[in-house]
Amino acid sequence: MLLAVETSGMTGSLALSADGQLLSERVLESEGRRHAQTLVSEVGLLLSGQGLTVGDLSAVAVSIGPGSFTGLRVGLVFAKTLAWLRGIPLLSVNTLQAMAQQCAGQYGEVLGISDAQRGEVFAVLCRRDATGLMRMVDGVRVLSPGALPNAEVVAGPVVEQHRVVLEGNFAGRTVSPVFPRAAAVAVLGADQLLRGEVANAEQLEPLYVRPSYAEEKRGVEVAG
Image 1 (spheres, helix red, strand yellow):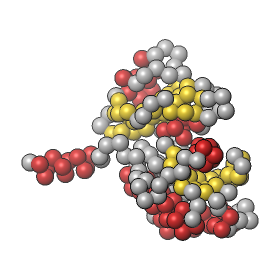
Image 2 (tube, rainbow, N blue to C red):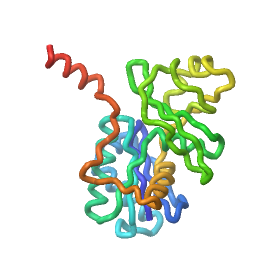
Image 3 (cartoon, rainbow, N blue to C red):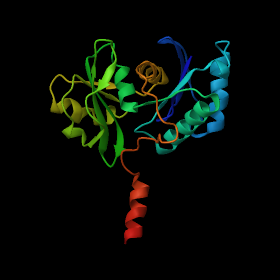
């Protein structure tokens, strides 16, 4: 039984899967993603709804970013603690890849994007393989919306605010508003487990890509 944790955005979620099949998904309260205590109770409700307990979990997958600095930290600390306490494998899933996976039923190539602030976006290009899973073609990049590589579809939570630019640069390109979901994290986490791609809980950190604006500002002030 695999538990998936997604806390990278404004609305978090949890999911349970077994043998590659989604059993249940639960949307977190808006403030829940920022409190580890809330995650504990939400997981309990998710499990009890399936007649299960935490002892039935055999792995935990977590969305590691890029995304909200606070949200990612809360989700990762919870997942790492659970993996350590239960002695179960920890899987780390790129958030942009998870969003691309949510489009796998319709598209073969997806550019997942999210807000990088300062008018830029985080971007990862993914392509669907023969098993129906989205594979990352390259690493996370920070780009302006007008400089994104071409792809069959651009998906993410910030596409609406950049729609004019995204659609204008490439004729016929589809723009799809997609928010990260734990169900997709579960799919990719289960694949990692089958491949033996287990994360090291002691070394795993959120994928921030770059410091927050506040941290960069503090750095400039210290240097000054």
